[in-house]
Amino acid sequence: MAYDNDNIFAKILRGEAPAFKVFEDDYSLAFMDVMPQVEGHTLVIPKDPTENIHNADPVILGHTMATVQRVAAAVKTAFDAPGIMLAQLNGEAAGQTVFHLHFHILPRREGLEMLLHARQMADFDLLERHAQLIRDQL
Image 1: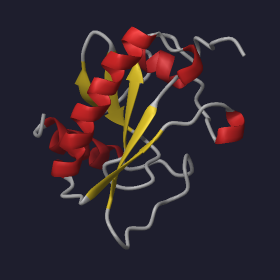
Image 2: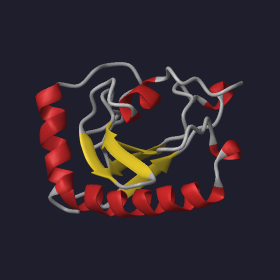
Image 3: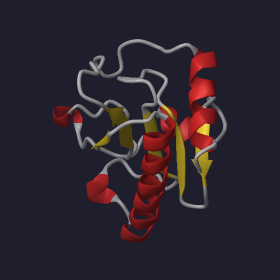
């Protein structure tokens, strides 16, 4: 499959779609998932038009993973989570719904139920508050 320049993450990168940004550098962008599975669900994407991990430029992927590491630590602290779950899906069969490489950061604790992926939009005011909690830890 060829990269789709009209996917939602490409639109976010071009400023054509809104996002609750947490962190940005020359290589990557971190923002709140608008259909979170848990409170604090954050996404990190490379700024490179890459569909999945198999097509990723290793240098950009390395920088993106450094952002994942940094943002995951901030999410862990911001949400007082004893654990962090990282998810990265490649291909429709794996559950990928947006075909731009992305990493999910999900704060986890025992007994915390996860919602189904990509099902219900969250309140945008709440997402902005969550983004600020994470930014405060960076």
